[in-house]
Amino acid sequence: MSLMADTLTEDEFSRIKEIVDKRLILVPTETKVGFPRVLHEPHVSYLAFATRNYFMLAMLDDREKVRVTELNSKGFHPFPGLVAEEGGYPTAFSLRDSRNILLMGNTVSNLVGLSLGKDCSVLLIDHHQEITTEQLGVYKYTVQLAYVLSFGTLITRGSMIEYLEELIDYSINTWHPSSSR
Image (cartoon, rainbow, N blue to C red):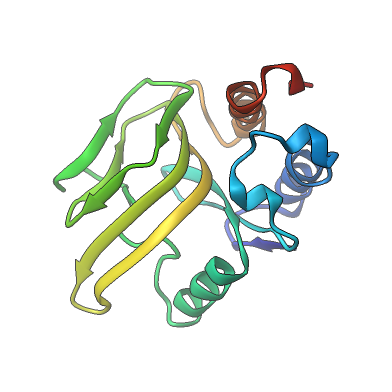
């Protein structure tokens, strides 16, 4: 199952769904050896959305899907404190003009997880985020698998699918070098 945010066009979402299904979800079990745990779940959902500054594709198990749906119904960002869209926030990772960055198994408390400059592509695996906000209090969650692209000169809305495919290729090669394409 997939969830689409209002900020993607039907064509963009359709192309993303086709790529995700073909490369990550509907692949043989033996090909998934080494893939993150969430891709082995019987019911994998994903959320794809774009803001003014970045695009994110997050893979969700049933528990995370409930969490994201609940936050969305209350008008909150599905991943509070994960990405700073504008400067001025203390962050754990500050990136700019960086592609195919792998951040795996990190825990970030009381900081924004990522500050993304222009033209970044980031793969998050088992990223634990804890943030305190007025509205949510102390809020903890785990990003099991996410692909994040920041827009700039190279990575634009027009080219984001191409860069998403590149990042997915990178992830598959990281998990299982013989599985690419």
